[in-house]
Length: 134
Image (tube, rainbow, N blue to C red; front, side):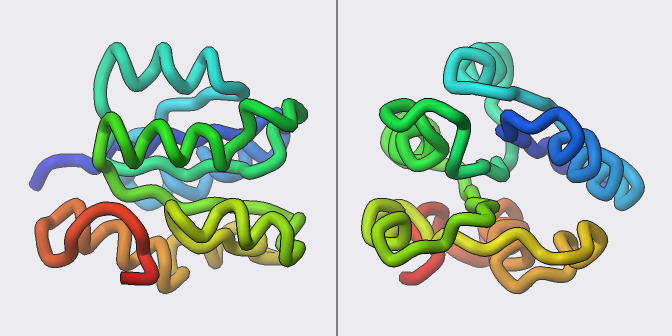
């Protein structure tokens, strides 16, 4: 069975490493990026099977929602958002791509999350990529 490749876009080094650790422990191949530039470089080198995007990357214009729009338009791979900022304003901005999700309190919950499971189904062809609300 092919190993699933996941792009993790997270500006916080410790959060990025924690997410990587959990995914690698569960046999996923992980590529990391801390901002728009690094995420685009990763996507141009090799298109992953899915992406996990932090919404707040420190840049209000080129944040995770912006990257989500680019991924949806250009790469058509499933992705989910991780965020500690699930305000109504953020939900409104992100709703056209996929629903934003609050980061679980315990990182090991990531792989048993319903949106993560839906994204994995999209990879295997059981669901259509894109908006997880569809």
